[in-house]
Amino acid sequence: MLHWRLEASRALGRAQECRDTVVCADEMLKNARPRPTSDGVTQIDTYGTGAMAGDGGGENTQGNGKQTRVQSLPAPLSRLVVEQAPFGLVLVDDAGRVRWANAGFRALLELDEEELMGRPVDGLIRYSGFLHDRHDEWVALEEGWEPARLAADPQDDGHLVLVSATPVEREQGDRLRLLSVIDPGESSAALEPGAWQRLPVRLPNVWLFEDRLEHALERADRTEGCVGLIMLRLDGHAALRETLGAAAFEALAGRVEQRLARTLRREDSLVKLRPGCWGVLIEPPLTPGGLQATVMRCLEAMEPPFRQETHPTLLTLSAGVAIYPEDGELPSQLLSSAETALERAGPSGHAFFDEALRHHLDAQLAFRQRLQDALLNPEAHFRLLYQPLIALDSGRCLGLEALLRWHHPTLGPLLPADFLPVVNELGEQVRLDRWVIATVIAQHAAWQAEGSPLAELDVAVNVDDDLLDQAVFDRRPLDLFLRQQGLERGWLSLELGQQGLIEHAASQTHLLRRLERLGVGLVANDIGAAPLDLPRLSTLPISRIKLNPRMIDSLERGGVLEALLRCFQALGVEVVLIGIETLAQLEAARALGVSLGQGNLLGTPQAPADLAGWWEARPTTA
Image 1 (cartoon, one colour):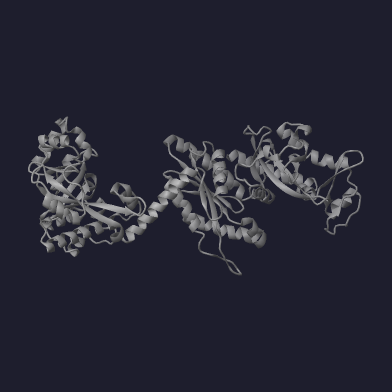
Image 2: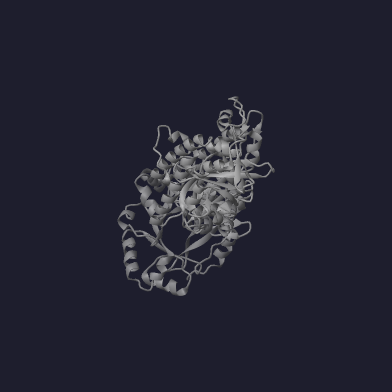
């Protein structure tokens, strides 16, 4: 890549020399007017400066600096000048078809004149995937050099070249464009001092972006990860450019780019690809949902008006997203997919190349938004059910577990596994857990006020281990929060995962002791879901453990489970087997000596109003 950039700089320097020599090729050919002569040879009428016209022997302006038509430059000499130019020149009509090409361009493609005439130039020159629609293509090419691939066969990769365009006005009023094509690999010009300064600022950025994309895909292959590519386009940028002028438009686009840079992560790559269009490379770790969130942040960054000299300006972006490897395995394919998605996005919108993924993410986004609304007013959207905890030897109900349900407006009641992962992503788990605890304490107080026997039962609440961290949420220690809720001693237990308990044990030793003095029991939940760290678990002030439902599959084998139960009995820790759904599971649990059980066979989760009726009608034995 560095070698190619050095060669490109040399080639640009050589091209500048050639343009200076051949009547500043760009200036001369900008006003070239091909016309047939009587001898059947195309003559190119040119305009030059006064001094140049004088050299031609015809009319001149004697150095007055005005452009004058060179009348005396004959057709053979005009043709010789452009044919011998040390780079490719090709004249293209409004339909994008080749009207004429010099020997340099024909040599690059190894085609003769008959094979080139009338061919679509898009089939010969491909602009690295960045110049999708034709209007932007010409704007970018007329502003400077663009990297491209040149090949006679569209199926071939071809080789890298630099291309620029010069508009040519004809007497008939139609418009042609003269493309200049340089192959840096064929340039032998020395790298002169200051040659780097002649490289357009944007051009190395485009090369760097392509290089980063290629390396990102290689890293993703090694790690079996994904890479996200976002194409961002300023809506109505062509009209803005025409209204504001090129300089003011570029200044405004620079401010847009600054906002985008502040929105993205430091490790994300943001590159201007063409006027009013940017590319963003997102490397792992990433998820489709996270990628959509990044796109939404970029679009939202445009909401504040941009202050101009005369009045504020409101701008919007469109975004197209492609994901490697699903939407393309090569950089060119991924770029093409992102541009295709961009065209589908519409103003101020975004689209994924995979439309099914977009619909899925839209559904996820709607789900998150509804959940956020519910978390702002939990009393109206969440409710608690209570499932009995049964002594397997006597069938007596010894306690309850509070279970959370979210009543989704369209999906109905949802289990915690359906929405708690999203609550965690939103950073609202501790807030929700505290609401659950406060609601349970209020319900227990209501049972006491009614004189209900349910007030005599222990109640367990399953909470996230972050609840023990005093640095989260409002920085109130958990024991202070419980005292402020009017908690009475001896009936509340908090269930936490064993790994979370172990991780917080060292840093929260004093908090665990204060909870113990407050009469709050600790339950290690989900034993069996992960490797058991029995030595460290035995050092914690836990009064009960709950076996994961997967342990039911081991009941018939019994050996390992029986040994585990003996260990906990020796530690004085009660064991609860949850997920008991059949009589066979119940009998197996009893045979192993499990003391407590929980499951739909023993008692389904119920609302407080229904629980009193269940209590009255419950059997005394199971």
